[in-house]
Amino acid sequence: MTLPLIFIVGPTAIGKSSFAINLAKKINGEIINADSMQVYKDLNILTARPSKEDIKTIPHHLYGYIKGEKRYNVANWCKDISLIIKNNNTNNVHSIIVGGTGMYIDKLINGLIDIPSIPEDVKKESEKYILENGINKFIKEVKKIDPESFKNISINDINRLRRIWEVYNYTNIKFSNWLKNKNNNYLPKQDYKLLLFTPDRNEIYSRVNRRFEEMMEKGAINEVKKLISLNLDNSLPIMRAHGVPEISSYLLKSITFDECILKGQQVTRNYVKRQLTWWRSTSLRIYGSFDKFPSNIDLNSLKLT
Image (tube, rainbow, N blue to C red; front, side, top):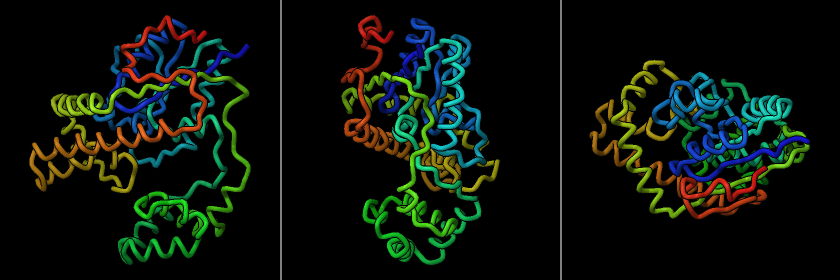
């Protein structure tokens, strides 16, 4: 019998990784990353990647293995994780999937529309269009190209608007038409148990504030310096990771050190708010929902095996 997948999910900075390690020790499991920024090897401190000691204790997968120059996405992740899950199933090992990127987990479980990968030059074209013509003209162009997709997206969601433009300009097929294709399913017929942690938001905010200060003390500024030295395109996902734009602004002397910390804390708190909203409205089947931090949950009470 195939072991069920176990998902440990919820907003950032609540202690999901430590909980997953303790669970893995108890049930013979291996940990797989489901955080869209933890895949990048150039960001260790700012993504709060598990320590070398943690990785020695329990096998960890899909952490820090992608170069920052790559535009990694949910389709890449679904393909990569499906291979690891298959191998763990063969070896009768529990796959414990940990992270807060809800879209990744949703697409792994429910499948992903099989849209062709968009080349880098097309993505640069959409960015160039906005720079040369302005965002308002770009929004009107997207509405004209695909009104059906446009009506379901906020005009402030530039990434998704660019996606509509890029898909159409590369494939000559509307994004809304691609969505009518059959989903590409990545999982075998396998049960899963999803543990959702949504502690008090203000308590999470306090943790976020402390953690960002600790990251700065541990060398986050030097980490961003090294990242900047790679001369990567600013539109790449890694360059938009929480803390990177803020520390970059500090290094350029456009904001003070204190402003850098305050801004870094704020963008992370904003992310926590969006994560809580997403997870509280998800249609995914929840095995256990907790309004506490993972460290306050008794593993023996969960009955996962």
